[in-house]
Length: 619
Image (cartoon, rainbow, N blue to C red):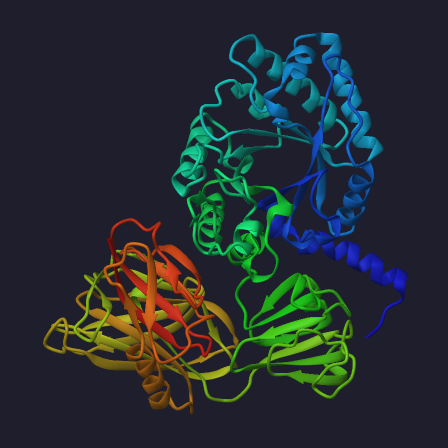
């Protein structure tokens, strides 16, 4: 299905507005310095705001010429076409010299000149607002003058539909008066440069958010800042990696920085406690899979509901640009557009093992088609024998590659729960116990790849017998009750099962205690007719082949295994089932140094979709 160029441009513009809401709610703000970085290298689809740094004022309220104005114009043009807002950052560190700010803010005439000149600058370059980077006003008169300046500037910008934000210190920012909170759209917390080495720890991020929210800053206006550089060397993250630093660590040769694991933890923190995340600065990031902005985007997509799915569609070749993950199902053009995939706008695809994607040239699964059963980095000159399929897709089917399907969920790997506890299991690893009537367990993003009949098996133990029930999406779909027989002991295990009919899709799977007095070790979901014995053997074999060491562990965790675990994903869960660390395993294992001392559950999902669960003790 093709459209004329005008209509396609109009549709694309409208869908840009529809495809950003989750990201727009959670702000992702990157600084672009005038003196460094390539506008063409910016990952625009992973940002909501870009602050161009820096515009400097004079003491009379006039503005100095902007450095590299052509770069700013190019940045605005590239951002505008992608729905990203651009603000001008005013001030900056400037070698600690804020005398111009002190002079203009103290004089009403100079303040007015400054505000009028900034409004003119914003209009001249078609910007979306101003980011005020007078970072360190003094207490007393200076603080009052800053507040007066921000009130006047905020009023002038808001009346024109523009934004006002500000960069502030992580903690001890008493010179930023609370009245400023009403004048800004949000504050960018510079939760870095706290000291020379551990200048931007996770704990300092927590302190920064708590400090500003404790003073009354709304969570929606609290944007957590993270560094893309290390101290004390001030080297960029990209430079550190080029010298051998680990992208998943935080220390290299005495230099402290934020690697992927910490960046993801901070992004989750910002999601839970604030309204966005900010980074200084974009040109310091690495490219490819080690990109910190990509790590941020992965968390944002997962937390916004865009990360679940078995096939991911990319706007550009080489898995670049806007990305949308889809679970199993059939998608017409309208359904694709509703999820943010534009007509004739797919250039590369990633497909999880065991699944395939059927691409159709026209809407409603008509016209020429192409079946893709593995990752395809560029649909131009397609190697699958069907010619050029770049920017040619108007409807798709996401399917399992075969009828067999089985997945095992470890009971202790719950995403949420009420009332239960985790304990050691005689069958290895841990089980869920202390289950009373009304307790429940929830497991997010469980995929049923095809519509039809499934068998759900529960590995249970009970002293005197009990009953459970299961459901999907918090009870929206009831799957029925299952009786649990008396096994004679809390660690005497047996199998119970139920047969259910489920429509293809990704759900939150729930287990509810209709009565108490039972333990749960694992759950297995199998497509009717699938070889569950073979699947179970494969899962057990995979688990027996993997041994994490050292255990107890202090810093980096390694694995003894006959199989290659590189590329497998992992989560470290605490006793309450909350994720405390997560990432992708490299050839050198996983960094768990940031975990607090205690007992955890390590859950690994291999590239073959096998689940491995191990007990982990952190020193």
